[in-house]
Length: 563
Image 1: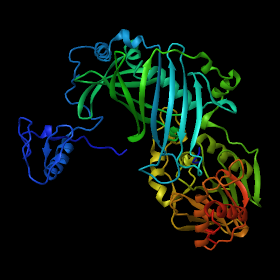
Image 2: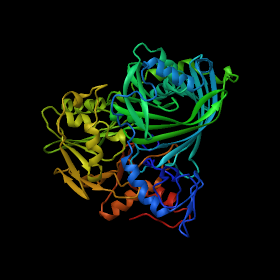
Image 3: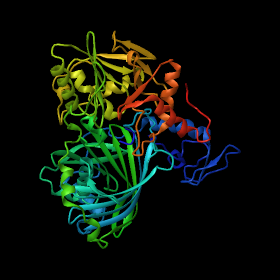
Image 4: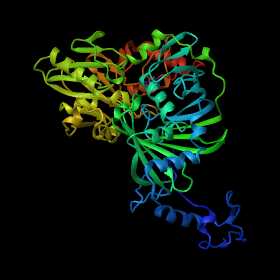
């Protein structure tokens, strides 16, 4: 569930317009331009806004874009030297081999934000989460500790802030809280490995030591030519973009799979920009890192007050070994479907509960599968369950009710098996991208045997089937539920509310505004509901939910319930 950048084209300032724009002398001095003027903070020149606005887009349109190939096969800044010598220039630019190799430990504060692209609200621009960390990295012993203060925007009132400490190596790790240790995730292990090996402290040293280091085609980055060197790290080719003028490593590129929510997208093109360079104890060091994935500005982290080779507190790295060992035992998103938690909601309507719920609906002419979450592997298990439970009965379709990535990640398997998929009209473009996303690094069935998806679009409403288990699909269209549709069983007065209903540990509603929007839709469509359930919640009496929404959204006692 939900708990579960504007890119600016390279522009110019007054200095780059010398000799071209009225009001700017070729010497760089500025002269009076009358009442329509402003001060350019970088050049300290007075410029004409209208003329500058007209000139800048024309110039920007002619500038090369990030990733464009530098024509002519040149090695900008590294002419007539091999790739290792080019990397050595970069090492020297950062302070030299001895200084980089002499970084044994590092500590810093960090502040950052992450675009919540995987959540089921709306598409770009995304809402963001925020984080303030205290980090210690021990390069010698290959471990790190991150004390994180998190701000989560999709939280209940007065609960947006939380604290957790990650203690981790590339092999295992734990989350440490007041309640004790719990296993960290596979994505934490991946991130730790990257920090220790591919961060700017070790990136060039590992590149120089790689036996397969070679040149790749040179690229433009921020309208500046870069030589590109490439080497293999843990089976994945890694490119480093070296600035032609100052030789500093401005970015890292690779195509890889992820263990976080980006798992759904298979082979993800990642570029990490290094910026905001400072001299730190003799090392020219980038304190800002921006993570771009598949062209999307995903996350930005700014390091504050980095210090090399400070004292290490051994006690801070203590963690429960047995708990840490469990972090590597998880199958992640490739978990198996389980039918152990089966609940019969009505005759022929079977709910299989898990971290993400799935329902099988038996209709007169076949089976409908409600939700295809988590992964292709998981949904392969769901469809196999249908065929074993109902041999010879056709699968009529899969209902995918939201655009949250873990909710729709298994749709690829439904397409691979030729099953029609019912999708909200607004979600069709995103699902088109999902099924066409390459999965060459870890091939799934759709990658191995491509098929054209059979989409059935859900607009305001759509009826499916006949008889006792007929269902009607209704778009929610709320501010927070715009990309979701609900599924109503008229005969049973049963409602599936997509990704809107979840109960906290104290049985209060998580984010009651979501269910308020469901209630508005129920009133709009004149539905009679006795029981409601959702992706992350089992069957719940409708009157209980109504009462909780009233209590949550109307603290003064005035009811907002929509009928």
